[in-house]
Image 1: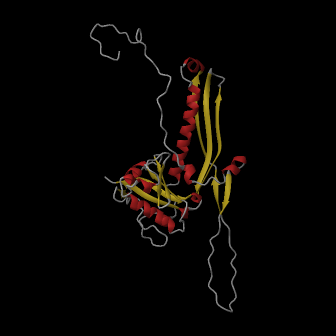
Image 2: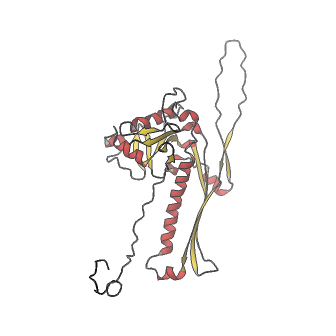
Image 3: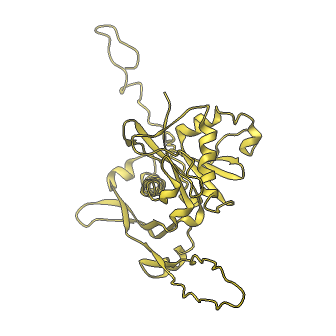
Length: 305
């Protein structure tokens, strides 16, 4: 019984006082996903038709030569290169419910499971991609001397992570953006930062709501707003790594830096022959790759004490 009984007093709970299980389930809040916002999915439709590898050809980098009047020009034969987007990741769910339990339950267990599986799958894929790209930026776009032209930006390094406080959260984010601009990326830039960083940012010099691009400066779908024209995304799917401190990778990039494709996403309900039951199954097959590391910058950081 919910209220303590005196010694010898009879129990009524479960006899004359029913124990209730409300039909409405307690809400589950899933982490916001950002992969579709920061990755290129240009090759996804082609790969869904057929194939497990996309050979993505790159535009070559050309060098202008210096000449003089009367001198012959020296031709250059440009070699085209490509990078491969391989569909090599498979994840699945397989949840079984006995038929008797499903029929006697006062909630629709199968539909509840299907919805939970689909949402959990999206979160798991998002977390896998964010972890996979963590160390794939160009060497000029990370480390204590980042910046392909100036080498003047400290974006942290192993055992030398940058401590992020209210006083420098905005400044370090602008450093991350500046490193990309030294690679000639000056538009359509995104940033994705861990949730704790977003908290520091909101308490930093960025105090006016309109600087975050809306009237309230509240994250609604992971998008905090814009700084200097750059979209700032908050993610709770980024995982800390063990170092001298627990550290995180924050990123800035252009959508063309990372290619992503999900080629198969099957959801089904099957009945095993050995048991009277139903199994809710989902399979996801996908791949991702940093195809242009020059367009991705990384800040190795930790929350300050």
